[in-house]
Image (tube, rainbow, N blue to C red; front, side):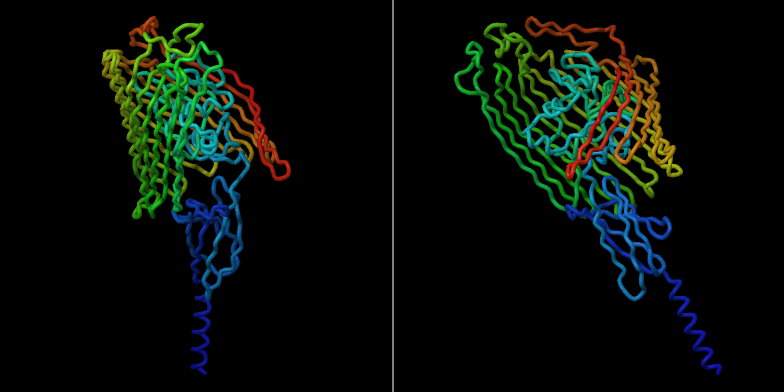
Length: 558
């Protein structure tokens, strides 16, 4: 009798122990269209327990046996929920494909709030340009694709968004250009070097319309253009293009300035791939353009690459560097020969050859913890060297060092906070401008509070200190605020107000030279510019049969 009792108790013990023992569940998540693995997918299971997929799209967790619901969540993809019956005597493996959002309302951008966010959730107007829009138009210069964007004009290299800024030839841009979130304006002239922007190796271009100085500082007075590098995955991606063309003769025979046709040629190449824990991408471009106007030719060589290493030992830690370099030989068209027969002929007195070298080196380190907080340290060494073979007195060398620390944190699943500090030190060596040093130090913060599932409110502040040649300017505080309300399933209302400012560039304050009859004078009394912009808008998703689109209407004032 005692023998049977012992056996019964042992069976009972092992049965209860088997029921309480948790079982391992494994799985992977991929893009249902491209079959590529998806990283950083949030996997929720068993009453809000969560894990995140790794670089190869894999995840695993332990749970009790029985039926469980597993939810998969990732920005830019439709949320999926699966039911799995977890058993002890079998392999518990699940493979899930996520459907990407095709609707433009769900495009994911990073420029507006310096973090991933859907376009529909923004409180400001934004345009997104995809790489196929560049390739289908055979565009080799970033200036050309920006010109084709609604609400933006680029005149002689100066960008203007919604007509919100004046014109200053070759200096003092009121629109800030960024590469992967870091400023790329030249330190001496404060202008955008369009020819060096790496459009052959991009995932998208994001354009913010309106004052954006709270997050991006000086020169974002009128808006921001952010060139985002190409995304890298385990499947190698190679792009190569080559084109050549001929400029036809003008209809007005008096304008003809050469017997043979003018030609242009370009070639571009890009490659990207992830090797285990290392992401790598590279791109290059070559251009030769004789121009359709006399004394207006150009030659260009450009190279860029990016490397990101994900740590094997520390989860969420990544580091790497980026590089962009280019060499440009060109003659700008300054002034025509005359109004009757010389419209396409440059006045030889103003024609001056420029040999320009430009490069940046961008080391960075990033650490993400539990998807709730993120630390970023980013730096940029930028060198711009302008050489004029026929007029060495106009030569200039501009060197700038940029450093930024940014912290992002989610509190209580409703409050998102971004805080950052940055410093940029520049040194100009030039007979043209004189020798100068500048230093700009800033601190900024922006928060977004989710009042309800439909209503979000954001506000931010920035304080900036600027000094030129050791002489300090006044400290500038600026503010912005915005609201976004989801009125319907595909209807989003937005409103925003933002302040902006711009310190004058070295060129505007000190440049003094002449190009034939064209005279350039310094302006020692120039002051910083201040402004503000506001808007109210609505974004409406449209669906007709299988066609998806959007309607965006905004009323703005600057």
